[in-house]
Length: 563
Image (cartoon, rainbow, N blue to C red):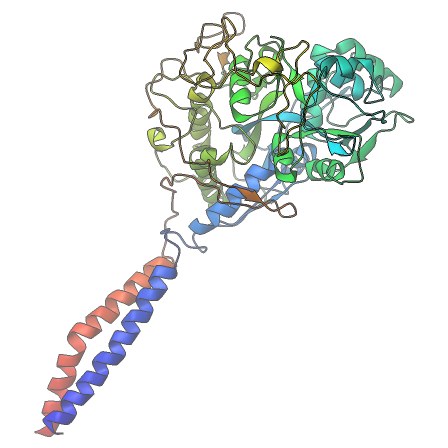
């Protein structure tokens, strides 16, 4: 072989090897950035709360990049708890724990080992569809007494005197009220009826008697419907919000997580709190409200980390949304039935994700991020899951907007004061609520300016300090419970406001998927094992070695053949 032919062959070989190397690099760049592949994580399934499902669905889409397949059926809290008890799912999501009495029947806990873990906070909102003069009303206000009377059939028309008293700046239509309630067992119903039973017991018990329930009625996961009251029942949060969001269904109102009003573009009623202000369930107002909640801190109790909301209902902070709460994910603590250690590895990794990075997205999804003490408690619960990879999450890097170095809840401390026109009286704000974009002019034309009320905490600019009525984190001397949202003596947290989540966020009305939902990435736990990424890296190394050492070997072999 001539030297010229040898050089041509060598050149063609280099070209081919270079092409192979380029393709390998392209494949490497196109591959997921995680060190885990789909083969590393066993798929897991869950069921339960539709109140929480907008957050859960977004998070499980997010973790696909790490190779996790997390399925979730939004079937309602009651069904989720029942499926977990029966062992047909790996985890459940619920607003209420096991062991509560509902219509005289105790919801018995499962025989398998389990634990509660805080999932996400939010406000149960009153989404409605109402027009006057052909234009949507987007700034409705309702007191707790009026809300209760609407959902017990006492108040049946929108132009009722009691609703007019809440809305001095609106011309209300002469239209029948159509309450839309849940037809399935739900945590939303349980939270709403618990609030009515605690704050408006007489009205609620009177309605329960008409429905054939024993009294005192207390909470129930299944809303009792009395024939002839004109109620409409729909399954799941998607069902009730979807019904109200139909243009033809004017006059309807439902109770649903705030997220659904944002997704559908409909308003929610501002609810009167104990300090005399009408407020909506924004992330900040929910964070303030939960400062009044108490959690069970007895680690030996089966109710560990469950919540008592009496202090939320009666909070005197001007900014409190009175129907604020948080939901739980129920996780197994022992291998049994369909649940394996491999599934536990996936579930623990998913939990580490939503407790830290996922909370950054809570506000744009219509929820409120968990405070630092609940995040820390949740991370401790992760360790109880069989198969959990031992991992210490640096909570300082979570970038949760509630965290601060002092342990105070930054989101709550910096929450703006309500506008002066939101105070109960003769004025009314015109600004639209929830997902409604348009304002509704009011007859009194109030000035929509923020004010500071004495002893109310942070000022409207967000730079004030909270007073003792909303801050602290000390142990309640009567119950031994710790106030939610404050971490006593905490020194962790970086005090940042988390991700820049002020950009446009679009959510598909059918699938619920949100785009442009930003979050600062944090380290996601990768399961051990050999995956696609490792194979690609090894392949690239081999190709590089061939490119370096292959041509000289070919030349040497060719020369030997010419001898």
